[in-house]
Image (cartoon, rainbow, N blue to C red):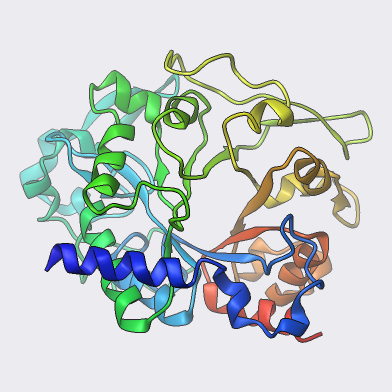
Length: 366
């Protein structure tokens, strides 16, 4: 049955490799300013995390039902080497671990990206113990009604879900895993990269043309992956990773950490360097439209420069809550999407993929 599901998933993806453009009318072609002229990808950030506890099968399934092009699991490792979906190696805010006295002694202090952090780390739990925990909503602005109802899924279970839903719906559903804190996991002797590739290899998914992106905020592990997979890699950009000129608009360099991970080559210094190993960059949206204390956001040339280097741009994170929107959007998240679609953004990470898809459909029909 597993082999049949994998085959069905692969065939569904091959038949729909043109992606969301197939869902648009041919008249929409030529209207998009993305690198390849196809509609912007909608990436379900931690699933439909605006409506369900993040990184749960329920969250991914709801995003699939909305029609998201990709679902995005963040991956960390358990003590016994299983990949599970959590936003951070810490379990404190996204599970009920703090309320479980049987695990109180697991609280520990570790060095994470050069900082001493105390909490409950997934790497101190076996998978069997992780399965005892339940997911909770970490965002205080969102409903807690689903707290305690869903377990923490493994990467294998997410792959199962995507395969099954792809076959059932007859459309491609992409997967967009992030390797979280890869240098940290390497230091724990729990490297993420080969575990991730092993899971994909078992299903025949580690091959060109498969709708899977692999992303990281660090450069060394992506450089390491470049020699091991034909899949597109995405260099995420944290605040401070892009260096601007004196006007604050044009990128003149990049500063991407490796946290002592020696598996890569030289750290990239420019977008051209990033393009030697990555297919795309993933900057924060405020690195593209910057908030520099002026009445309106200033428009940079990040997308234009990335496209000139052959890099797509997938930006994060779009949310519906008014507190997350710049004043110029008038509390309307659709206005924010429209602005980025105007600029030619290639992909958006959204907690509310239904809103992103609505904005995309309106943009295509304009």
